[in-house]
Length: 332
Image 1 (cartoon, rainbow, N blue to C red):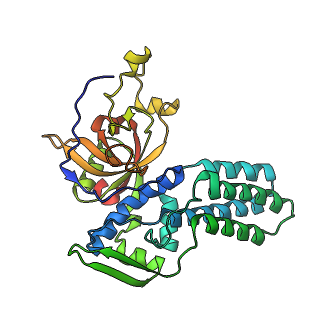
Image 2: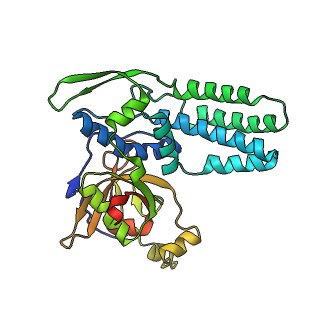
């Protein structure tokens, strides 16, 4: 391990209101997308208390849509082997921006109190049961032994039992910046998203990172917007210290192998893979305006990193951040 000194202070620091605790991989991915939105809710409401949005709500509709797509494909292809193979690809893929757009534009969002975390949302529980029921449903449907509406009904029951019942109407209380308790009554998910989340989600797109994109990401943070990035967090990091830095371990010296490949070459041969989403909510610059380090939230709870955050060096961003969700106005 190299000796190095990395600061945990930032020129622009957007978020200190707490982090999600999502040990499940897909929920963690969803929470990364929710982080910038909950900041907007906080700002729109003028809230002092921590705001959290429900990842279970997003997961419920993501899985419902996945089931619908799978059964539609099975109806078209009418081939059990191909339909099951397509399902396995869908189950393993990362949640993405288009998934998030589809859910929030069609169904809105809710605060976490309206659809709280449950003890059954991990892979070993309801999602595991959901996956197996959908596999069985594909086989039953193609072999004409089960009606498609019965399959959908079973899936809805599994998700409702494990993730919670979808709220049609709810109230939401928070502490305002004036220290007073405030309550919003008779909200529904769609109106909550449109009235309080204050985000034009169609203004954002996914782009592969390079020096220009890195500067755009830093500029977004400087102007008050968290940025979701896709990275390979298996490399050059330390959970205890809360560090992501290419100087943390010299792999050439330690293992006696030459890792001096380009980023593209590392991706092509599988050394770098899309692994996890991080929400960047802080940045520091050098005297020339080049981003030195970012503050990164991984949605795995406050026990990891520094209260759930990592300090990511600019070099680590260059090497291991694969893509970023950037507001298109920063790309002109």
